[in-house]
Amino acid sequence: MGVLLLAFGSGMKKKSIQTKITKHPHYIEKKPFFSPKEIIFRSNGRARVLYISPKMQILLLTFFCLFAVWSFYSYHFYARSGSIIHRKDLELVMAKDAYVDLISDFMALHQNVDKILSHKENSKEIEDYKKKATVFEDKVKQITDAPGLVSEKALDKKKEISEVLLQRDVVVSERDELKKQINMMEDTLQEIKNAQLDVFERLRVLSSKEVDKLRSTFNEINVPLKKHGLYFNPLANKKESKGGLYIPAKSALDDKRIDDKIIAIYKNVDDYEYYKKIMKGLPLGKPVWSYWVTSQYGTRSDPFKKSKATHKGVDLASRTGNKIQVKAPGKVVRATFVNGYGNMVEVDHGNGFLTKYAHMNKIYVKKGQTVKLNEVIGEVGSTGRSTGPHLHYEVVYHGVSVNPMPFIKAKAS
Image (cartoon, rainbow, N blue to C red; front, side, top):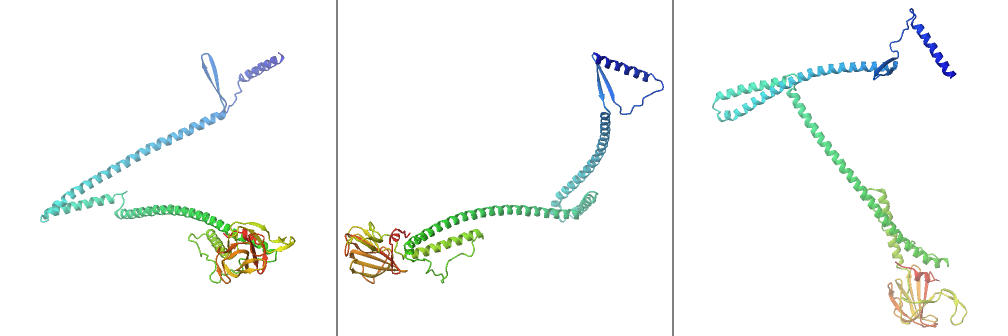
C-alpha cells in the first residue's frame, strides 16, 4: 500500500507541475514538425488512440510523394502516347489508301493489256495505255519516295540480304543436322570399338589359355628330363627367317588398344600353331588303349631274382593281342627279337626322342619303315624275359632313358 501511495503521490505532483507550466503566459514549448501524433477514435462510448511515431510520419510522407510523382509521370506518358498512336494511325491509313489506289490502278491496267494487245492497230488505245502507265509509274515513285518508305535500291539490297540470310539459315540447319549425324556416328563407332575390344580380349584370353595348356604339357614332360640334367626347349628350333609372325600394320578403326590386342592374338595363334607342330613330333599319350601299371620306372624288385634292379621303362599289363600304337610319327630303327626284351621295336621321333616297345606278341613293321601318328606297330605279348602279357615301354631322350609316365599322361591336344 505504501508503494502505491508513493506512485500516486508522485503522479499528482507531476500533474500539478505540468498545470503550472502550461498556465504560464510567457512559456510556449516549440514542437518539431514530425513530433509524435495521436489520433483518437470514438465509437459506442469507447475511445481508441492510434499513436503515429515520427519515423512512421516520414515513411507515409515519402510514400505519398512517390505516389504523386508516379501518377504525374503516368498521366503525362499516357497523354503523349495517345497523340503518338493517333499520328501513326493516320500515317497507316494514308499508306493503306495509297496502296489500295496503286493496286486498283494496277488491276485496271492489267485488264486493259489483253484488249490493247488484241487490237495492235488501234494506236489511240495504245496511247491511252502509255499515259496510264506513266501515271502509274509516277504514283509508284511518289509512294517509294515518300518519307519513311524504303527506296527501290534499298528494297533490292534488303531482298538480297534476306536471301543470303535465308541461305545461311539453311546452311546452319544442315550443319547442325550434319553435326548431329556425326555425333551419332561417333557414338556408334565407339560402341563398335568397345564391342571389338571385348571380342578381341576374349579371343586373347582364350588363345592365351590354349598356349598355356601346351606350355604346361611341355613343363610336365620336362619334369622327368630335369632329373637327369636334361631339358627340352620347344622354341630351340623356331625359325622366323622366312617372314615370322604376321601382324597387321594398323586396324581399320585406328585404335592403339585394338591394335595391341590384335598383335597379342596373332602372337598367341602363332605360338599355338608352332607348339602344336612341335607337340605332334613328341611321343605323348598311351601306346595301349587299356592297361594297368604292373611295374614303375626306376628301382624295383626283379620279378625273377627278387632283388633290387633298375627298370628303364614301365610295364603296362594288357591282354595278349591288344594293339600297340606309336604316339608320334617317326622312323623304325629296330624291329627284331632282343634277348631279355623279346620282340622289340624302336622308333626314332627326332628332336632327340626315341621310344622302345618290348615283349610284343607280333611285330607289324620293319626296320627303316616310316610310321605315322597312332599307326599300329604290333600286338601285346609275353616274349622274352616276361612273367605275363604286358608292354614294356621306354622313352629315351638324347640316349638317356627317362620316366615315360608323364609322356603317357600328357595330352597332345
